[in-house]
Each structure stands twice: as structure tokens, then as C-alpha cells.
Image 1: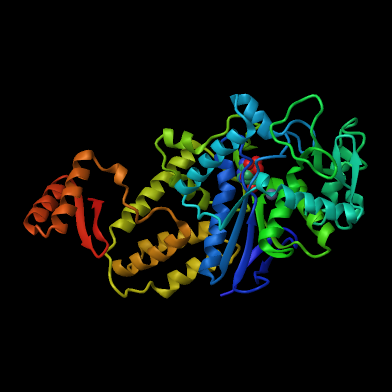
Image 2: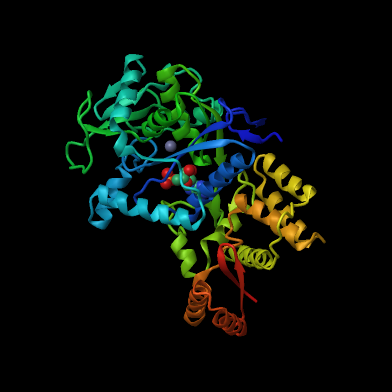
Length: 459
Ligand code: AMP
Ligand code: ZN
């Protein structure tokens, strides 16, 4: 079955074909680790996870690379202001490196809780300074960069098709909207820093020697350099949020293609914003919500994953606590229904539901439609074993913890009885294990013995 994916570059839903089937090279822009990520960020990561899982379902083998931005992302997209990492360090009285470590670990823990598959390569910008310097040298050799007093800038007028990803009108808007007095040494408003010199008046924690002087890389160069290092000069899919289209990804293309004269990325895919009170959820906007905030209010991170699946990734998704509550209820019902289904050997899912589920994903990852097909199937008269088989397959994409028994939901007493029963079975003391099963049953917990050991569910 063909898979259609919307490509920001062609502005069309195109049939996806990788360059070297069945391999797919996938690069996703990772976090800037100066603070916790908010649930808006995680909307984009959930979309990327559904993409990755769907590619697998459609028979592809994905090599997924994600970067960690731990240097060079400035507080202003116009290459002004301070490095966000240095700001984060100063805020917490720590070095930029300590901040990076802290928030990278927090990010990875959140990803685990959201059932996001770990990337095959997780690469830090600070571990790839030589690669970035080399790429800048290639651009310099082609006459595509120029020097100002504060850094080396990309001369966008010398790269034909600079506005290809975002459209010419938008780029004209950037030019017209450029603030008077904003870096007068820049030749054009769209020019951007590939290397910044260390400020003379302020000590930075992170700086490196380069052919142009001591300093640090611009934000965009890390993604071009690391994507090409791990996936080749031309690769299949590059993702991020829609905010990356006009600047970050447009600049990544200019850097990569300027250096190689080859197409950089074949499919560009972007997730629309999570919005709160009609505005993009953003760290700079304040009032953002983290996964820890959700947990403090009694939500499971997977309730939020469910919430993300209720909207198509190219439509804005509204964040309200009421809507999240509704997603929590839906996930709980889906889990209860799943856990209540009998396991049956060789019970293939009915083809029509399976097809509806796959068709939805094949249509540019229509997750809400895929989810609807799951509910339709549950309401149908299909035998329990077949339903379970279908749900187990669907769970490979949805990853909503449908069959996960949540040990944390058990009381300490019940946990003690379950452990005692596992021990009794290991010691073949079946009389005791039956007694313990009855005790657990009286507490509302049903225990079943499977090949993988005992499994439990609440009545
Ligand atoms: P950052 O840490 O700011 O570099 O962002 C990490 C990822 O989250 C990027 O792909 C952004 O495009 C994405 N992102 C940021 N804010 C939102 C939002 N409100 N909704 C969806 N994605 C977002
Ligand atoms: Zn990036």
C-alpha cells in the first residue's frame, strides 16, 4: 500500500519513496536544552514518533537522527541577543554544560514517558564543532560567506532559490520587516551567522578556536553538518515544527546545498503548533505547561499522547485542561477495553478494520481517523480475540500503553500478594498460588498465567 506524505517543499501530498529502499534517513530537530521542554514541543515529537512508527508499518527501515542543541541558539532569530544556553546557566548559577546535561536528561526521561522511540543517533552540537567548521570552510571556499565585526555571515543573495521552502512572499516580508539599525553590517535581512565571535566584553563558557577567530557556531549550521554526517548529503525526510520553516530549515538548505550543490532533503515535514489561549505555546510567551505539570494534576503523559492523536499534525491543536481530561477518559476506556479482551491464538484481525487503520495512516498520517477506526472496531461484533489482535497491531503505532499493566496503580498489599504468588508458582506451590489468586480476586484484581508469567488487571 502506498504511503502519501505532505511535503512542505512541493506543497503537495506525494507518494513517499525513499532514495534507497527500504532504508529511510530521517532527521528531526531536537531540543535546545536550556530549560524544560513544554508540551508544545512534545506535540512535534509525538508527530515525529507516529511518522517513524508508520514508516516501519509500511515496511521501511528507518535510521533516525536527532540533534541536541547545546550551543549557538540565540535569544533572537536575527542573530542578536545572547546564547540561550548561557542565559540558562546564568539563571541557575551553573555552567552552560551543566545546564545542557540537566535538561537533556529531563528531555530523555519525558520521551520515555511519552513512548517516543529513541533515535538511532542522538548527537550534540558541541560534539561536532570540527564538522561545523569544515562545512563553513566549504561555504567560504565557494564565496558564500562574508565577515562582519561579530561573525561570519551567509550571503543569501548568492544562493539561488533561498526562499524555496517558505515562499518568496514570506522572505520579502522578512526583508521589509527588518528593523532599522539591526546589525547594519549585514548585507541583507535574510543573511545569518554561521560563526559568531566571542563577545569581547563578556566571558562565555563555551568557545572554540576556528580559522576565523575564537567563537561558537551559529544555530543552523549544526543541523546541516550533523544531518549530512549521519545520513549523507542527500537524504529522505527532515522534520520539525512549522516555526522552523522560514528561518532554521530555510537556512539549513542554503548551507547544505550551497556547499554540496546537491539536493539536501527530499521530504520536509512540519507539525503545526499546539496553541494555548489562541497563541503558540512557547517558553518566551511564559505560561507554558511541562509534562511535570501534567503529572502533578494527575495526568499520565500518555493521556497527552492520546490528546496529540486527536488532531491531524498539520492542524493546530488547542491545549485546554478540559480537552486533556476528555483525552484521559478516552485513553482509560480504551485501555480497559483492551485489557478486557481475551488472548486467542491465531486470531487475525479482520481485514476491513486493518485496512481502515492503514488507509488513515497512508493518507498523510491521519491519526484521528486511525483512532476512529479503533473505536469502530471495538463497537463492532467482532470476536474478542480478533479485536485484541487488531489492537495489538494498532498499539505499535498508537503506543498508548494499552496493554501495560500499571504497577504503580496497585496498593502495596496487592503488590506483596502478587510477588508472593509469583514466588509460589516458581516453587510449584500451586495450593498457595491458588489461595493468593483468590485473595487478589477479593481485592478486585484478576490474575492470569501466561507464558510470560502472571499478568493482572483490575476487574
Ligand atoms: P526548541 O527547543 O525551541 O528548538 O523546539 C523544539 C521543537 O519543538 C521544534 O521542532 C519546534 O518547532 C517545536 N515547537 C516549539 N513550540 C511548539 C508548539 N507550540 N507546538 C508545536 N511544536 C512546537
Ligand atoms: Zn535543526
